[in-house]
Image (cartoon, rainbow, N blue to C red; front, top):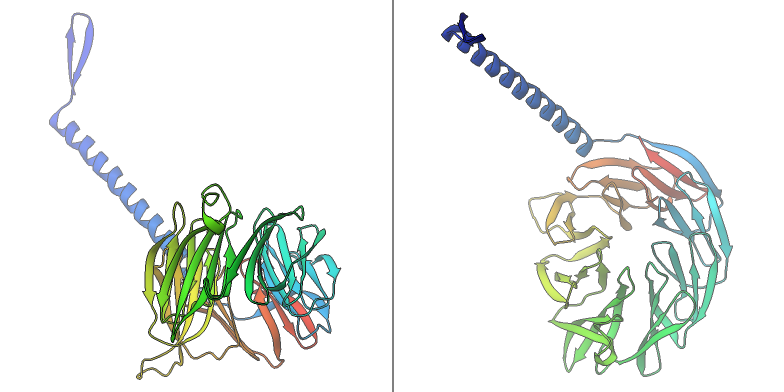
Length: 397
């Protein structure tokens, strides 16, 4: 470096060699940072791929929940645990397999649904409705007519479809057992109700009606609003959509503003944020074997039409906007299909298979004992499985 003195101040001037050394050091540091970033991205990608395509080889029994279980017992994922129910009663099992509470009743053909903390149990073709909260406290309702379907919202609002002699009714109750709304519908004007679902906040009800118009049949999807928007509407009917030559047996709210209507030859996604509107239609050109839906995804199991394939079924999974996120050919024979945190669960008499949303089969197992039921336990990797002699909380490993 050259050194100069001027007016009592020291000034330094860099030589060309010093400047080049400084530039080289900066380039080296930049290259090192890029290499470090590349290594970090590679590690994160490896972790992501390892998780996305992970494979499990066995089921570890976490706890035996019960022995000598009724063959009619069914399970639903609830919070981080599960709900177990049959005609004699209902119980809540937490994530550790502990029975938090157990309540007895006598209800034939129970219809069970839940949202938030509330669980509703109804007597199909009867008049009794039971509403449970997460602590097991119960409130009893008596419907005016025979119950065909029931749903519950996160505040405990109950919507019930009732069958009269010549007409049907939609009734809403709040958690304090107060009747909020009664809407009369007729088969001639509205059609026959096939399925209902209630929004989480309890303000909107979606109903799928089968309508017979002369020699033709069509399906009508109707939206009833019980908030401010529906106050000025006759019978609270906010909007209705007709679909010719289509039967829609499954309708599901997916989040607050999305409704999925699954028909025999198409699936329709509705946006209900302001006024209900069709967002997307997905054509289905194969016979549907089974469907499953939850808050974030819906899955269709179709007969595989590809003649070159040995797999009998084609499973497709979609997100709430109607985008297909997975498609996979399978040959698994099954009696029930569930959606869980891990993906799609197929359960047969002696077999289960789990396929994640990447289309990867994470786990498959043949059992020597007959499976009475198997369902997600509300937490990733955990399931409740019932054989003829006991019910177990199991974990994939």
